[in-house]
View (tube, rainbow, N blue to C red):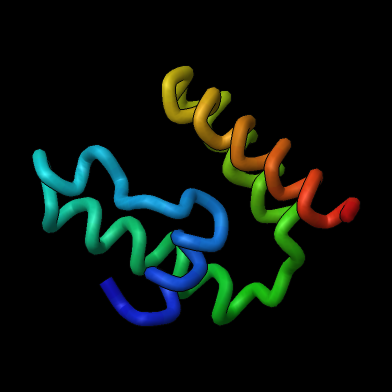
Length: 82
């Protein structure tokens, strides 16, 4: 994973992805895109990024990951309010 995508991933999730052990090549490509390229080119704030992720997860039926991102959203909102 690139340095920038690793930094952005850890900012939200703070740990490694549980799927990195089962499909490491896919996860590396996905995380480099989702946490590297998107942050680099779109220049959008954390709230908008999280809303985008939640919308994608609803559309794709990713309930387990949706719950994980909701928890991240709540923690991020709390950090920003302090």
